[in-house]
Length: 82
Image 1 (cartoon, rainbow, N blue to C red):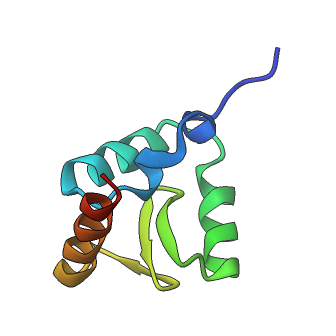
Image 2 (cartoon, rainbow, N blue to C red; image 1 turned 90 degrees about the vertical axis):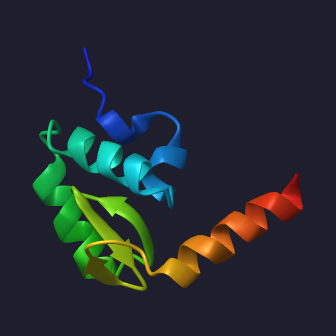
């Protein structure tokens, strides 16, 4: 039986902008056996966005949290789609 990684379902959690959702994604990563490989791959690819291997990426760099203007822009984009 093939095991599933925590991120194998709905990807929206891994690309969230809310602090609580980012924290949830990071916590789920800590339970994953593929965490190290995922993080190395994200670093090698300079992943532009999202939680990878338990770390938050923004513009190819690991950051503690997303810049406020990025969060505000994302919320504005979501509101305009409604």
